[in-house]
Length: 231
Picture 1 (cartoon, rainbow, N blue to C red):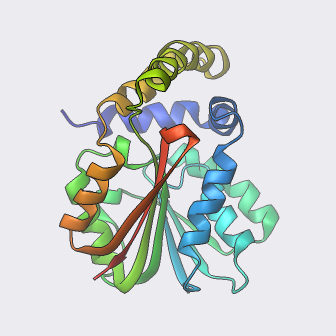
Picture 2 (cartoon, rainbow, N blue to C red):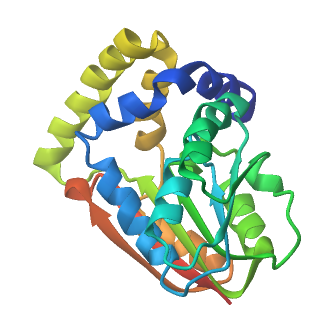
């Protein structure tokens, strides 16, 4: 079943409280994860960066602030309300960020037109991961870097039980109270349960033609940052 017809309006609805809930759900750790992901993307001083699934532009702004060479950043998301809530911060920062409403599976960019792609918490919401890797590979120049920050299923027995209790009980309750949209924060734990492990995701990325595929887990294994190069 396609996710996009109901995931898009769901993210539009929670846009006003999205950043607040991210901080609360991650106990503030999401900022550090984003900084680590951006640092990977900036290693080769890319001139053009695509922030795929940019949401409210947290990652785009982190890339702009962390870079010493002022890259051009394209922030793409299919939920227009998410972008609309992030753009005032971009304007206040004076950042060179262009917001584009579009689909990560059909990127509206020329082949080989970006030097780096960085993405946070996008893949779980896509209809097809293989199509996403192909789409990313098409717009990346040869040698360009792909960096993915995403949740990962927790397999350690003791922590898995605690994590499920937090994710399946506390997160939906908090999401309903703060955003008024309970379905969005019920979807979050369900989407993680069904998602590939960090190793399985690395294998998928490699199968799509990327090389030097690596990952590192954070948050006691609940989050992973993957990075790879376009062959």
